[in-house]
Image 1 (cartoon, rainbow, N blue to C red):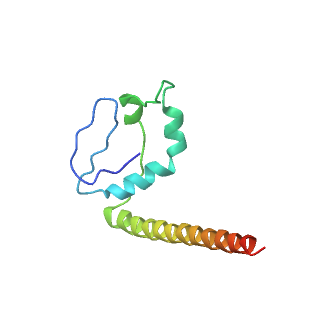
Image 2: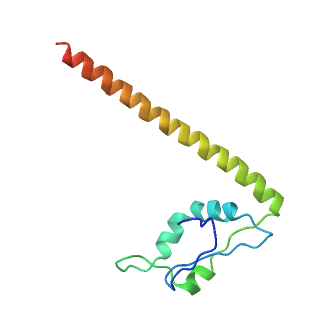
Length: 108
């Protein structure tokens, strides 16, 4: 699942959603992410699971008013940013731990 930042073309095996001015693309993206397991289960088992166009077309995404979508996106984006900072901090803590461990082992 990906969000294109500009107009693009895809082949027939790629399902796409084109948002209009009444919908926030990030809201649609977050909504689809929430239902990711369901989407994976819809994929037909081949070398690469594919959801056929008619199956994909039956997916329902609840769409509140645009302003509500934007508020939800702002909150979810803030949560994602916080999560990213936590992941970065955890990586730095692991580096520190490994460094202290390495130094303590080298001193013996």
